[in-house]
Length: 352
Image 1: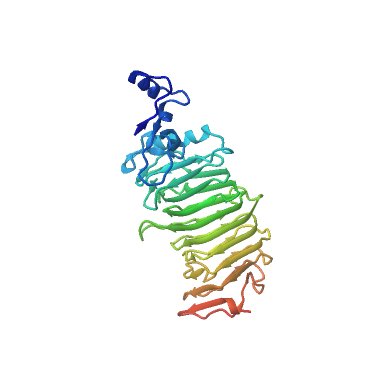
Image 2: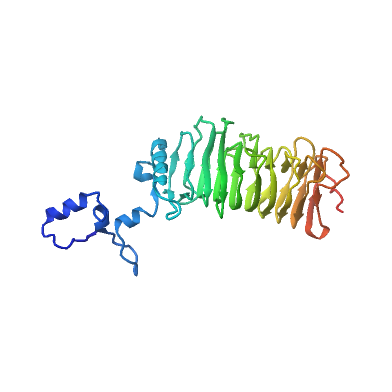
């Protein structure tokens, strides 16, 4: 490291005093970082420290053994010390496995939680608290590039809450494992959920909720303009997507809906949705209760458009769309030109 020598100071003692000072313009602001790459610009250690809030600066080990709860909570608290308008703070987890047994990580307005890679894990498998492991609030909050491990024996613990999140907030490049309820989205708009994999730790784990729930906590509010891209719901679970509120402009593109239990997409509300599209997804059996169907609703006025999807139907009798009344009405809109059905041991339902 190179040292900046303030003008007019002549002794090494003066330099050491300034380096030890916490005043603005002193301390780490006097230390230049020697960059390991060519053609880089000079920066001070203070500048680099403000790029991220690194959990290891608060003592987190990330060794998969040490309880890092206190360090993670302290680092998260530091995010509130800066205005989100001028500085979108990032809570950074270097590569490792971080044991977390706290009440939950709440990201303030405009902040994000970022891992170094998908081998970076927040392990809450022994956490007995109820509530959400991570809560996103407000403007452009994100979780990006990290694996989250839940407690399969704790039904009250949920994965991520995206609450009042807008303007490109969301969840990207993440793995959620052993959560009975993976992702709750409430009062959100213009958010992105991309490259997410829901999974379980072993074949003995039985999940009983829904990978994604829309409007569960605030069913009287609307969720709109959400993009789900390459979201893989490929583990045994009751539902891939459960809808409790009014929704508008919801789009699923790519990914897989292979949950085992009941309908892949289920409406728990009678409110009419608008512009719901499932595009270029893979849908597979099996439904353990009630037959083979993709979507179940509470009203025949609810509808979803399914386009360019591969539907692989199982041996259990049923239908692609199901409602509680007037079953002759179509809940799902299909096009012969845009649906591919792969049949084994069952008859493919006739398409309009």
